[in-house]
Image (cartoon, rainbow, N blue to C red; front, side, top):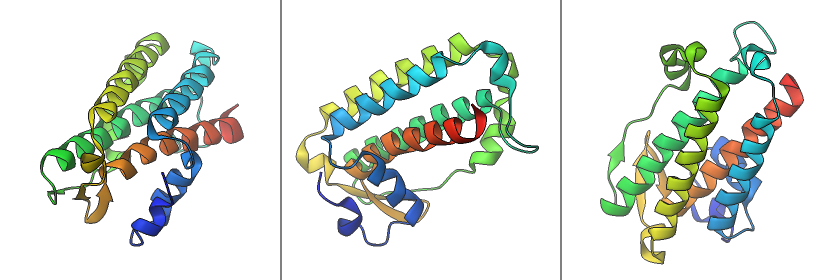
Length: 171
């Protein structure tokens, strides 16, 4: 991948930040490496620690993990939709509202990690199925133009972003 943020100058900075976290690697490697690092850090946190939030009104580790699952699923859906229906507009999602509704306190660490692993496997398989033409196809999510390829890098970078937050504020 070259500098996607140059190809997409109107991309909001927080997306550019995500892309930069995994830029320079082939997309397949970026997705695989981010998934491996993410699973590794979450696996090494005790189940009891999953209820920890670093401050009042912040997500617990369990909620953060569910958010990462939700975001990957939504971004993957966008990528598939854009690859199949170029130029389509998909509405955005409110991550805080999703986190509140998710009610993850009943979900075990093992269950969440298995879901994240399975989702990561299917996300990588989907992106591996796209040809170069599909990867450069564009669509709109929350009124922002993305390429399919950019969404793949955003998925990987989003995971790195939350791993960094986990290391800096939770552990």
